Structures are given as C-alpha cells and as structure tokens.
Amino acid sequence: MKLPLRYSIKILVLLSGAIGLPSYILAQWSVPVNLSPNAINALLNESMGSCIGVSGDTVHVVWADRLSTNKGAIYYTQSADTGLTWSTPVAITDINRNAWNPAIVVYGSNIHVVWREIDTVNGHRSSWYEHSLDGGNTWGTSVVLDTAIADWPAVAVSGNKVYVANDIVTSSSPYNTEIFFLRSLDNGTTWSPHQQITFSTGRSEDEAISAQGSHVFMSWNDNRNGPLQIFYKHSADYGVTWDPDVLINSEPSYGTMVSANGPSIDVPSAGAPTGHYQIHLNQSADTGATWGPDMNLTNDPANTYYYPYMVCDSNDLHMTYVKSGVGGQYLHSGDGGSTWDTPYNMGFSQITPFIAYTGCVLHVIMPDSGHINYIRNPTGNSGAHCVNTTGISPRSPAEMEVKRYPNPLTSQTIIEISSSEKPENVVLKLFDLVGQEILSSSFGNNDKVILSRDKLKSGIYFYKVFQKEKPIGTGKIVVE
Image (cartoon, rainbow, N blue to C red; front, side):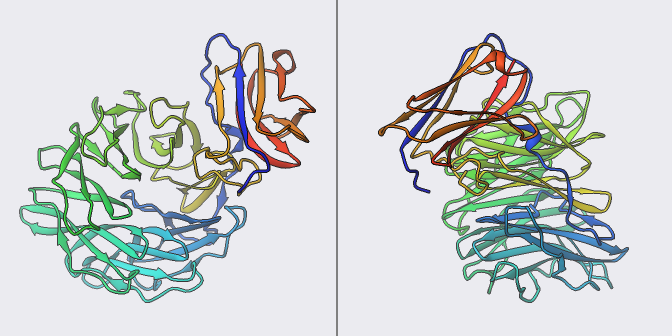
C-alpha cells in the first residue's frame, strides 16, 4: 500500500520503572469459535505438523475426526476474510478409511495436505497426500506415498516444489526408525523415491520441515545418544544433498518444529532439564551453521510445558504451546527473541495449538473436548507483513518507522509525526482493552500530540493515527 505521505511515527514515553504486563493487546483476542460443530472427536496433529495454513487473506484449516475406533477422516474448512467467517467443513478423505494426524501447507491457490493412515484390515501405517489446485474448492485423488510402516508425515512447499518427510520403521527388533525424504517438482503430481537422510540407532522421529527458495530445513527427535534430543539438518539444493546432522539441544527434549526467516532459523522444543518439560528455543543467524545458547523461555520447574509451535515475521516472533493442567499459551517477542512478553493464557487446549498470521492478524487453532476452536487477534502481528487487512495497521517498514522509548509511561507520551510534507487532516485515536474509543485528538497544524498521564488510568491502550481517514500507523501504550 502506498501512503499519501511518508511518515515516521515517534513515541517518546517518560516513565519510572517497569511493570509485569504484556506489550501486546490481550483484549484483542476474540472469543473461541467452534470450527467443527458436527465433529465426533476432532483432533489436530500430535507431531507438530501444522494444521493451519494461510495465503493472502485466506486461512485454511484441517483436522482429523475420529469417527469410530478404526475409522477417521480428514476435514477441511477455510475463511476468505481473515477468520471472520468460515466455510462448512468438508471431508477430503474417505470417511470409511482410518486417517489422522494431518498437516497442511499453502502456496497461493495450491493446498497440500499429508496425513497418517492406518489400514482398517491389517493395521499397516502409511503416509498419504492430497492437494487442491483451486484454493480448496475441489480436491484431487488421495495418493499413498509409501508402502513401508511410516508415521507422522510433515510437509513444506516452495513454489511448485513440495517436500514431505516421515519416519519409517527400518527394523522391528531391535526397534529402529529413520527419517526419509521425498519431493515433488511438479506441484504434487509426481513424487521422487524415498531418500533416507538419517542413519542412527534407535528412534529418529517426529520430524518437522520448512522450506524457502532452494533451502529445506528439518528438525526432529532422536535418541541415538540415549535420551531423546533435538537434531537439525539443512539442504541448500532443494533436498538433493544434505548437510550433516547437528545436535542443537543436548538435554532430554521432545516435540520440535523449525521456522525459517531468511538466514534466521528458530527451533523450539520441549526440554526437561529438571524433570518438568519446559519450552526451549534454539536460534541460528546463519542458516544453521552455528547456534546460539539454548534459551529456557518458561523457566518454571514446578510446571510442565510442551507442544511449542511458532511463526516469525521479521523480528516479530509468535509462539503457542501448552501448559499442563492450564491450557494453551501464547508468547510474543518483538525483538527477535531477545526478550519476551508475559504469556497469555488462551485456555481449553491440552494438545498442540497452532498459530499463523495474515498481515496484522494472528490466527490460533486448538482442540478442545472433541472440537477445533479458533481465536484471532486482529492487531497481534507487527512484523514486515503487517498490511491493511484489518483496517488497523497498514504500515510499511520502507515508508514509516515506529519507535517506543521508554515504555511504560508515568508522566506523558508525545506522539510525533515526521513528514516531508505539511501534515493535514491527521488524527490520533486511543482505544482501551475492550476496543472502545476513549480519546480522539487532531494534530491540526502541529506534528505532535501530547497525552498526559492524568487523563489515563493504569493499564494497556492502543492507538491509531489516521491521515485523511486512512490509517497510517498503530502502536501500544502501557500506563503504569
């Protein structure tokens, strides 16, 4: 979006001390919406393969409904308006088969879905694939990807290249599983033979995969050294050749995924340094060649945390996970993971919440009591992809800069506009946690608006700056 003027929004906040409040707007999270009202026992993937994918303003969601003891089908729904309304769920697999643990990835109008299926006669486990070429309106024929005993397929896409990884049982006694990789170079029409990419004794499993350009990234659980640990692997040539395995979290760990943003790689996992699993994060700034120190994000040895999943938009990091006995949690960092806000309790989920973003909007799905619940935050993402999909925050990093210093405030806040032209028809609006407008102030012929502390109660607020009734920036204010 081209803005009418080139603005630089500067927020100067005078304060004394800090408070333990999150910097994101908690009240912007919506009430839960049941996406699967007719489900018998709806479940998401237990192995960190995401069940939510996005393209533009459209959000795509899949889940497995366990219709009976030995029957299950993969269901699909979509929202074309950033999660405000949803289509009627449809089964994209045969309801007389036994499919579960789906994962989805989206590229434009191409939707790729993989899942684990168990033969209803002999109990043989295998990986399956299906795609839609028209944004989910119609679906192709289901394809079995392997004839060996396989579990937990994961999927990634980069243009017309589709990548699938799964763990296959290579020996039943002693029990051994290895990670295998296969790819399609024609948008899922044909597939390469399986390529074994791990060679160790024991369990190599629960793989996660991501792709961008010619690069493919993978992380997984592996007990070659005794306890399950987190390993990482990378290919720079579309999966033709692979770098050596890298141990990135040596303590007992489980439940990992991999997120790539240019050369920055983030691998969260659930690690157990004290007996209780905690949410850990390992980061690399050079595509996995070197890794920084392990970070314990929860650091709460009295409680157990697991199933982390995250997405990144420039330095805006969004993570979901489960706190045992409490439910789904959301955690945010606005500086690439150096510091983190206070967790937000989303409730009701005891397994695998997944998160995605479209522009400024965050989307989370979580299973609860046999159904799939969805919540959204219309102002939750402030990264480079935050565009005017919500009418709230259309700022472009190339055309405006938002700075907050210091924060929170105890005296006053000055919101100043820097422009190459004289500002005209510029208005500041301030909203409370429930989204109610509590203040509107015109800039007039000035380049700043001063908000006094005596006009604001303690709490969290967010503001929007409009020029000729078009939003040009948004921000968050904490009042102590």
